[in-house]
Structures are given as C-alpha cells and as structure tokens.
Length: 346
Ligand code: G4F
Image (tube, rainbow, N blue to C red; front, top):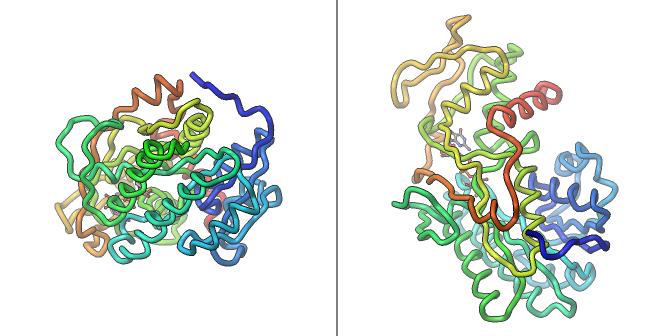
C-alpha cells in the first residue's frame, strides 16, 4: 500500500549514479518526470558514463562533483541541489575488493552514508533518504530464512561497513525522526553489471568462448550460492519505499539460491552450449560436451579469505507493504545479459 504518490516533480539526488543501480534509478525517476541530479566522484569520461548512455539518459541528468569521503563536498552538493529524495548508492561495492581495501570501503560506505543522513537531519526542507543496505550484513547465520528482524553477524569488511550504515539509519530514525529507509539487497544483476562481479564475468566470458575469442576462463568458488535478481525489479521496490508515509527496512530478493556452477550452466544453455563438470576442488573443470574442450577452470586466486554462505531470504514484508514481487527469474535475467554481451562485447 503506497501512502504518498509522487506525482509532482521532485528533485532526486542519486549518489553512485554511474553504477548499475544508480543508472536504473535515474531512468526510473526521469520516466516519472522528476529532476535528477547525479553525484559523481572524479571526472565524467566516456568509459564511466556508458550505462547512462546505453539507457539514453546521459543528457537528462545534472551532474555535480560529489565525494562522500569529503565532508564539505556532500554539504555543498546538498545545499546547491536541495533534493527532496536522496538515493545513496555510492560505495566501494565489491565484497572481494573490501578485503584488499578495508579502509576505503569503510570510509565511503560507512562514514559517507552517515554524512548523507546528517544532512537529511539538518535539511531545511523535508528530505527522504534511501540507503542501500546489503545481505552481507547477515554474515554467519543460523536461521533458515532471513528477514529485516534477523540477527546480523557480518564477517567481511564490506558487510561490517554496510551494517554500520544500516544501524545508523535506524538510529537517525529513532533519535531524530529522519526519514531514512533501507533496502537489504541480495545480489542483483543486469546487462549493466560491472565485470568484476561473478555474473557479468561469466556471461562475458561465455560469450567470448562461444565466439571462439578465448578457449577458457577461470572462476573461484563454484559452490558459492547466491540469490540473484534483476536490478530493475529492485529499483521499483526502492522507489516505492520512499512513497510510504513512514521509513522502514525491507529485504529484497528472489527467495531462491543458485550456485555459481548453476549460473554457468544457465549461461551455457542460453548460448546453446552443453557443459559437463569433472574433477573436484581446484581440479574441477567445465567441459564443452560438443568439442570435448575445457571452457571453465578453477583458480584459487579468485577465492576469498572468507566467503560466508548466503541465507535464504524472507521477502514477505516487501510483498505485503510495498505490494512488490519480482518480474524476472534467473533464466530470463541471464538471457538478457547474454543478449547484451552478444551485441556489445567484441
Ligand atoms: O558477484 P560477487 O562478487 O558478489 P557478492 O560478493 O555476493 O556481492 C554482491 O552482492 C552483495 C549482496 O549480497 C552486495 F552487497 C555487493 O555489493 C555485491 O553486489 O560474488 C558472488 C559469489 C561469491 O561467493 C564469490 O566468492 O561468487 C563467488 N565467485 C566465484 N568465482 C566469484 C568468482 N566472484 C567473483 N567476483 N569473481 C569470480 O571469479
């Protein structure tokens, strides 16, 4: 049930607008007639705005230089833009990289989020904030399903950072009445995903194998299970969160777990390749049944120091309060990613 219908034009500030979620959210807001201001860190060059250009919205956005690590930067942008809605996606978003860069991860994702909340608290006009939380905050867990009320026990620098921001969002709501909603987002992918994430790495490399450009490629933990959704489905729910009368937390997910190996199988299927697995551990290989050639190998270099099992998600709250349900299943998502890679990566 939606309490507020954002029919009149609002000013929407999106941090992390050059990323997958920021780009789709910008498209969503522009389609509804809102003014979109995009906060960007560093220069806006052609290899960074490709998502916005692909969506055909690059010229519709007002860009402002914004670095969440710099306190003055966020204050200046927020004073100039005077947003009604802030979607905070800016962060170092790779769990894998958070092991290499824990300080940078915590600065941008933790203190950066806090600076956004602090602005919303002092803003002269009422301002609603969405904070991108993550399923990584569950960490090592024992419950069978994970909801907004589950115990949080993160073990990665990324998860710990996201939990700091998540708890701060709740503290700002309780202490100051600030409107901050959070989405506890399980994995969400799309053709616009970065190639440092396993899904895009698989679809891009499988397309390259299919074209005969490479013989094989390597992955890390094939047994890792993830709940993968389409980012476009999440963006609809995220928008709906700021239309509610009261701020809240919502788990977004498909409710289904698949292994990395299964993701490879679905991708192979979308390309008409039949794949068979042989060997175990680091000796495991995926073989193209038609040619007998190895197309996937395992390289321990891609293992993580810590890779907690992802729990099953309980999305009943989002279904009930937001009236949300995803439109994509995994094969449909993969089909779209493969089609995009077939058209673009040569
Ligand atoms: O695609 P991934 O890097 O995503 P990860 O770590 O689950 O994080 C994503 O989802 C989180 C929400 O749950 C977000 F908060 C976060 O920002 C990000 O969007 O890795 C998925 C799984 C991992 O278990 C990893 O160990 O795939 C496994 N994996 C196996 N081989 C690999 C690889 N991951 C990557 N990146 N590269 C590999 O070669």
